[in-house]
View (cartoon, rainbow, N blue to C red):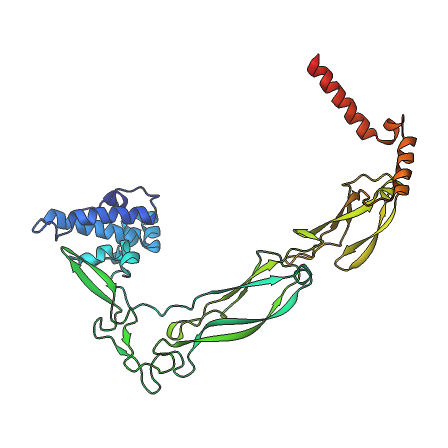
Length: 379
């Protein structure tokens, strides 16, 4: 008798995701399982059909072969991708994939838990703008968990070794039956390791790791900015019982600078200038990260004008591109004037009377606009 299409058996489309397939399988397996349908041969046959379809469609290689060649591509008698076990199945098989993450079980039969990789660590490093731009080497003191030097990470007393767990017999998991189905759970005795340490190391107390501070010399590359992260592989916490160590991530924060503001590879700063310098022009000194430079101010410069000094910004950490320094000139109104200085300004102001349009075209145009606005408003 020809077999039904596996997608049709599970009631899903050919583009169904693995999650959709698992969801359909769970629903049908519970419906047809022999424990829920004792003596029902049709339900048993349906259950086997559903299980067969699920095993094919959740295996990437088998699914690809089935999609291309149909049942012939997965028929073991024809050299296909593989076959299936006949007969009934424990209900834990059904939920091994569907509920594995919840109950701690693995795929069909599980297996003991692998020793966990060490945790990653994060170190927040604060730098000045100058340090971030030029690069710097820093010595960091990191509190961490290191492999115990007495037991070499085994957790067992020197001269002894761990023994097979008597509860799970080394599997790392135990089966818990609840009503008509069973689930696998992490062994409560050995916590998934499959082994028991009867004589723990006196230094690490069986953990295989001890608290320790280590000192690292870290080179920070030139051009880093706030938010950049430097990964030091294997410098995190030691793994459990000889498993690989985690990584250390150095998170960079650049302190606010009293003069410069950074935006990408460019730097910005405000430069105050006097009224006379803005009107008559001249040269002023402006700071850069490499020292002072002279900036030529043209006559009649207005406040807020931006001047660009090319190549005086920051070199990118990811390329050889160098940004610019952009200087915004801000005209500063003089304060604490003497009577003589005030009188001179009054005399100067008087010389402008009647020539406002010539000397202050923006102000004159603005007042003309205001006048027209009120005429239109009242008109």
